[in-house]
Image (cartoon, rainbow, N blue to C red; front, side, top):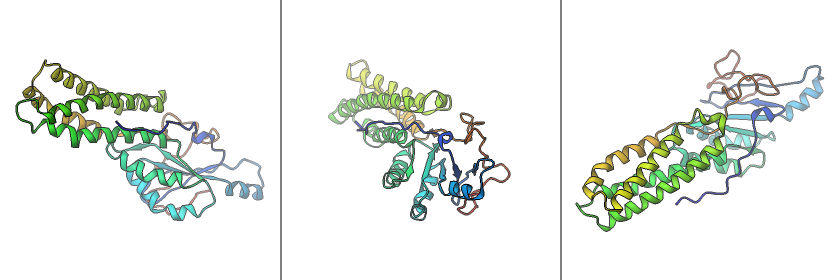
Amino acid sequence: MVELLSLHIINYSVAQCKYAAVWSLPDIKSSSVCVVPAGSSNSSAAVRQKEMTKLYKIHSHAHIQALQARANELGHSNKSMLVNLVSLESVRIARESYALLRPLIKESWIWACPELEILLVVAGLSLEIQKLEHDVLPQLMVQEAKLERGALEALLLMKNSAITLLDLRKCFILALGVLLADEDLVSARVKKLSIMLKDTADDVLNGNRDIVWLQERAPLLVQLVTDVLETPCIVGYDSSSRALRGSGINGRSSEDATSPGALHPSSPLRCAW
Protein backbone atom coordinates (compact mmCIF):
# COMPACT_ATOMS: atom_id res chain seq x y z
CA MET A 1 0.00 0.00 0.00
CA VAL A 2 1.32 3.35 -1.00
CA GLU A 3 2.20 5.57 1.96
CA LEU A 4 1.26 9.19 1.47
CA LEU A 5 2.53 12.24 3.29
CA SER A 6 -0.15 14.24 5.11
CA LEU A 7 -2.23 16.09 2.56
CA HIS A 8 -2.08 19.86 3.15
CA ILE A 9 -3.55 21.66 0.17
CA ILE A 10 -2.39 25.25 0.07
CA ASN A 11 -5.26 27.62 -0.64
CA TYR A 12 -3.54 29.88 -3.09
CA SER A 13 -4.60 31.28 -6.46
CA VAL A 14 -3.18 33.60 -9.05
CA ALA A 15 -5.76 36.19 -8.05
CA GLN A 16 -4.17 36.43 -4.60
CA CYS A 17 -0.83 37.51 -6.04
CA LYS A 18 -0.99 41.32 -5.87
CA TYR A 19 1.78 41.92 -8.34
CA ALA A 20 2.60 39.04 -10.64
CA ALA A 21 4.15 38.41 -14.02
CA VAL A 22 4.01 35.28 -16.11
CA TRP A 23 7.46 34.32 -17.34
CA SER A 24 8.32 32.11 -20.27
CA LEU A 25 11.04 29.53 -20.66
CA PRO A 26 12.04 28.11 -24.05
CA ASP A 27 9.53 25.57 -25.41
CA ILE A 28 6.86 26.63 -22.94
CA LYS A 29 3.69 28.54 -23.73
CA SER A 30 2.73 31.16 -21.22
CA SER A 31 1.10 34.53 -20.97
CA SER A 32 2.51 37.67 -19.45
CA VAL A 33 0.85 40.27 -17.30
CA CYS A 34 2.21 43.02 -15.12
CA VAL A 35 -0.14 45.22 -13.11
CA VAL A 36 1.11 48.63 -12.02
CA PRO A 37 -1.48 50.79 -10.25
CA ALA A 38 -2.57 53.86 -12.15
CA GLY A 39 -1.06 57.14 -10.98
CA SER A 40 1.98 55.61 -9.33
CA SER A 41 5.29 57.31 -9.76
CA ASN A 42 8.12 55.81 -11.76
CA SER A 43 10.11 55.18 -8.59
CA SER A 44 7.26 53.43 -6.79
CA ALA A 45 6.51 51.39 -9.91
CA ALA A 46 10.14 50.31 -10.04
CA VAL A 47 9.98 49.19 -6.41
CA ARG A 48 6.85 47.19 -7.10
CA GLN A 49 8.46 45.61 -10.13
CA LYS A 50 11.28 44.36 -7.94
CA GLU A 51 8.75 42.85 -5.57
CA MET A 52 6.94 40.98 -8.32
CA THR A 53 6.35 37.26 -8.18
CA LYS A 54 7.18 35.21 -11.25
CA LEU A 55 4.40 32.86 -12.34
CA TYR A 56 5.37 29.71 -14.20
CA LYS A 57 2.70 27.44 -15.67
CA ILE A 58 3.17 23.70 -16.13
CA HIS A 59 1.06 21.76 -18.62
CA SER A 60 3.30 18.74 -19.17
CA HIS A 61 6.26 16.78 -17.82
CA ALA A 62 8.46 18.51 -20.40
CA HIS A 63 7.68 21.84 -18.72
CA ILE A 64 8.97 20.47 -15.41
CA GLN A 65 12.13 19.26 -17.13
CA ALA A 66 12.62 22.71 -18.65
CA LEU A 67 12.14 24.33 -15.25
CA GLN A 68 14.68 21.97 -13.72
CA ALA A 69 17.17 22.77 -16.48
CA ARG A 70 16.89 26.50 -15.71
CA ALA A 71 16.55 26.15 -11.94
CA ASN A 72 20.04 27.39 -11.13
CA GLU A 73 19.66 30.47 -13.30
CA LEU A 74 16.23 31.28 -11.91
CA GLY A 75 17.35 30.54 -8.37
CA HIS A 76 19.88 33.37 -8.52
CA SER A 77 16.98 35.80 -8.71
CA ASN A 78 15.70 37.21 -5.43
CA LYS A 79 12.15 37.28 -6.78
CA SER A 80 9.79 34.59 -5.61
CA MET A 81 8.42 32.00 -8.03
CA LEU A 82 4.86 30.65 -8.08
CA VAL A 83 4.77 27.38 -10.00
CA ASN A 84 1.24 26.77 -11.30
CA LEU A 85 0.91 23.04 -12.03
CA VAL A 86 -2.13 22.87 -14.30
CA SER A 87 -1.99 19.43 -15.91
CA LEU A 88 0.08 16.45 -16.99
CA GLU A 89 -0.19 14.43 -20.17
CA SER A 90 -0.83 11.18 -18.28
CA VAL A 91 -1.19 9.58 -14.87
CA ARG A 92 1.77 7.35 -15.74
CA ILE A 93 4.25 10.24 -15.83
CA ALA A 94 3.12 11.63 -12.45
CA ARG A 95 5.70 9.62 -10.49
CA GLU A 96 8.57 11.10 -12.46
CA SER A 97 7.00 14.55 -12.42
CA TYR A 98 6.73 14.52 -8.63
CA ALA A 99 10.30 13.26 -8.28
CA LEU A 100 11.53 16.21 -10.38
CA LEU A 101 9.30 18.97 -9.05
CA ARG A 102 9.36 18.30 -5.31
CA PRO A 103 13.10 18.99 -4.80
CA LEU A 104 12.84 22.21 -6.82
CA ILE A 105 10.08 23.51 -4.55
CA LYS A 106 11.25 22.15 -1.20
CA GLU A 107 14.86 23.28 -1.60
CA SER A 108 13.91 26.88 -2.30
CA TRP A 109 12.40 29.17 0.30
CA ILE A 110 11.07 31.56 -2.36
CA TRP A 111 9.43 29.02 -4.68
CA ALA A 112 5.92 27.70 -4.09
CA CYS A 113 3.66 25.20 -5.84
CA PRO A 114 0.14 24.97 -4.36
CA GLU A 115 -0.61 21.87 -6.45
CA LEU A 116 2.38 19.84 -5.24
CA GLU A 117 0.35 17.85 -2.70
CA ILE A 118 -2.27 17.04 -5.35
CA LEU A 119 0.53 15.78 -7.56
CA LEU A 120 1.61 13.58 -4.65
CA VAL A 121 -1.79 11.89 -4.70
CA VAL A 122 -1.61 11.35 -8.47
CA ALA A 123 1.91 9.97 -8.07
CA GLY A 124 0.51 7.53 -5.50
CA LEU A 125 -2.15 6.44 -7.98
CA SER A 126 0.49 6.03 -10.65
CA LEU A 127 2.71 3.93 -8.39
CA GLU A 128 -0.10 1.63 -7.24
CA ILE A 129 -1.41 1.06 -10.76
CA GLN A 130 2.05 0.42 -12.18
CA LYS A 131 2.55 -2.23 -9.48
CA LEU A 132 -0.53 -3.94 -10.89
CA GLU A 133 0.82 -3.57 -14.41
CA HIS A 134 4.30 -4.93 -13.74
CA ASP A 135 4.04 -7.20 -10.68
CA VAL A 136 0.49 -8.44 -10.12
CA LEU A 137 -1.40 -8.99 -13.37
CA PRO A 138 1.46 -10.81 -15.16
CA GLN A 139 1.23 -13.54 -12.49
CA LEU A 140 -2.35 -14.25 -13.54
CA MET A 141 -1.42 -14.80 -17.16
CA VAL A 142 1.32 -17.41 -16.71
CA GLN A 143 -0.19 -19.78 -14.12
CA GLU A 144 -1.31 -23.32 -14.85
CA ALA A 145 -5.02 -24.11 -14.77
CA LYS A 146 -5.18 -24.18 -10.99
CA LEU A 147 -4.88 -21.72 -8.13
CA GLU A 148 -1.21 -21.88 -7.32
CA ARG A 149 0.50 -19.75 -4.71
CA GLY A 150 1.48 -17.02 -7.17
CA ALA A 151 -2.08 -16.59 -8.41
CA LEU A 152 -3.50 -16.52 -4.89
CA GLU A 153 -1.02 -13.85 -3.85
CA ALA A 154 -1.87 -11.86 -6.96
CA LEU A 155 -5.58 -12.01 -6.13
CA LEU A 156 -4.97 -10.77 -2.59
CA LEU A 157 -2.79 -7.95 -3.91
CA MET A 158 -5.50 -7.05 -6.41
CA LYS A 159 -8.04 -6.76 -3.62
CA ASN A 160 -5.71 -4.61 -1.53
CA SER A 161 -4.95 -2.41 -4.54
CA ALA A 162 -8.67 -1.90 -5.14
CA ILE A 163 -9.06 -0.50 -1.62
CA THR A 164 -5.95 1.65 -1.92
CA LEU A 165 -7.04 3.10 -5.26
CA LEU A 166 -10.46 4.06 -3.90
CA ASP A 167 -8.81 5.83 -0.95
CA LEU A 168 -6.45 7.72 -3.27
CA ARG A 169 -9.33 8.56 -5.59
CA LYS A 170 -11.22 10.12 -2.68
CA CYS A 171 -8.18 12.22 -1.76
CA PHE A 172 -7.80 13.30 -5.38
CA ILE A 173 -11.44 14.37 -5.73
CA LEU A 174 -11.35 16.34 -2.48
CA ALA A 175 -8.12 18.04 -3.50
CA LEU A 176 -9.40 19.03 -6.95
CA GLY A 177 -12.58 20.61 -5.65
CA VAL A 178 -15.91 21.19 -7.33
CA LEU A 179 -14.78 23.62 -10.03
CA LEU A 180 -12.37 21.14 -11.62
CA ALA A 181 -14.53 18.03 -11.18
CA ASP A 182 -16.21 18.42 -14.57
CA GLU A 183 -12.83 18.35 -16.34
CA ASP A 184 -11.49 15.33 -14.45
CA LEU A 185 -11.21 12.06 -16.37
CA VAL A 186 -9.05 10.19 -13.89
CA SER A 187 -11.39 9.55 -10.96
CA ALA A 188 -14.09 7.79 -13.01
CA ARG A 189 -11.56 5.44 -14.60
CA VAL A 190 -9.90 4.71 -11.27
CA LYS A 191 -13.29 3.83 -9.79
CA LYS A 192 -14.08 1.49 -12.68
CA LEU A 193 -10.71 -0.23 -12.32
CA SER A 194 -11.07 -0.56 -8.55
CA ILE A 195 -14.50 -2.17 -8.80
CA MET A 196 -13.31 -4.58 -11.48
CA LEU A 197 -10.28 -5.60 -9.42
CA LYS A 198 -12.29 -6.24 -6.27
CA ASP A 199 -15.11 -8.11 -8.02
CA THR A 200 -12.66 -10.29 -9.93
CA ALA A 201 -10.64 -11.16 -6.83
CA ASP A 202 -13.76 -11.87 -4.74
CA ASP A 203 -15.33 -14.11 -7.40
CA VAL A 204 -12.25 -16.34 -7.59
CA LEU A 205 -11.38 -16.34 -3.88
CA ASN A 206 -14.99 -17.19 -2.95
CA GLY A 207 -15.04 -20.08 -5.40
CA ASN A 208 -17.61 -18.58 -7.76
CA ARG A 209 -15.11 -18.55 -10.66
CA ASP A 210 -12.09 -20.65 -11.57
CA ILE A 211 -8.56 -19.87 -12.73
CA VAL A 212 -9.49 -20.36 -16.38
CA TRP A 213 -12.08 -17.59 -16.11
CA LEU A 214 -9.53 -15.45 -14.31
CA GLN A 215 -6.97 -15.86 -17.07
CA GLU A 216 -9.58 -14.96 -19.67
CA ARG A 217 -10.44 -11.84 -17.70
CA ALA A 218 -6.83 -10.76 -17.17
CA PRO A 219 -6.46 -8.99 -20.58
CA LEU A 220 -9.47 -6.81 -19.73
CA LEU A 221 -7.85 -5.83 -16.43
CA VAL A 222 -4.61 -5.04 -18.23
CA GLN A 223 -6.50 -2.79 -20.65
CA LEU A 224 -8.24 -0.95 -17.80
CA VAL A 225 -4.88 -0.41 -16.11
CA THR A 226 -3.41 0.98 -19.33
CA ASP A 227 -6.42 3.25 -19.83
CA VAL A 228 -5.98 4.84 -16.41
CA LEU A 229 -2.22 5.27 -16.76
CA GLU A 230 -2.58 6.97 -20.14
CA THR A 231 -5.35 9.33 -19.02
CA PRO A 232 -4.48 13.07 -19.12
CA CYS A 233 -4.59 14.54 -15.64
CA ILE A 234 -5.93 17.90 -14.48
CA VAL A 235 -4.02 18.96 -11.38
CA GLY A 236 -4.83 22.62 -10.73
CA TYR A 237 -6.33 25.84 -12.01
CA ASP A 238 -4.97 27.64 -15.04
CA SER A 239 -5.18 31.40 -14.61
CA SER A 240 -6.57 31.60 -18.15
CA SER A 241 -8.93 28.63 -17.82
CA ARG A 242 -12.68 29.00 -17.66
CA ALA A 243 -12.52 28.49 -13.89
CA LEU A 244 -10.66 31.78 -13.45
CA ARG A 245 -11.28 33.45 -16.82
CA GLY A 246 -12.26 37.06 -16.42
CA SER A 247 -10.77 37.37 -12.96
CA GLY A 248 -7.05 37.30 -13.75
CA ILE A 249 -4.80 39.27 -11.47
CA ASN A 250 -6.39 42.05 -9.42
CA GLY A 251 -9.64 41.38 -11.30
CA ARG A 252 -8.06 41.81 -14.73
CA SER A 253 -8.00 39.16 -17.41
CA SER A 254 -4.74 37.39 -18.11
CA GLU A 255 -3.56 37.24 -21.70
CA ASP A 256 -3.81 33.89 -23.41
CA ALA A 257 -0.59 32.45 -24.87
CA THR A 258 -2.06 32.83 -28.35
CA SER A 259 -3.20 36.42 -27.93
CA PRO A 260 -1.32 39.36 -29.49
CA GLY A 261 1.59 40.42 -27.35
CA ALA A 262 1.74 37.22 -25.35
CA LEU A 263 5.01 35.39 -24.90
CA HIS A 264 5.52 32.36 -27.10
CA PRO A 265 7.67 29.22 -26.76
CA SER A 266 10.51 30.80 -28.71
CA SER A 267 10.57 33.88 -26.50
CA PRO A 268 13.67 34.37 -24.33
CA LEU A 269 13.37 34.37 -20.58
CA ARG A 270 12.02 37.83 -19.88
CA CYS A 271 9.14 39.74 -18.38
CA ALA A 272 7.00 41.97 -20.56
CA TRP A 273 6.13 45.11 -18.64
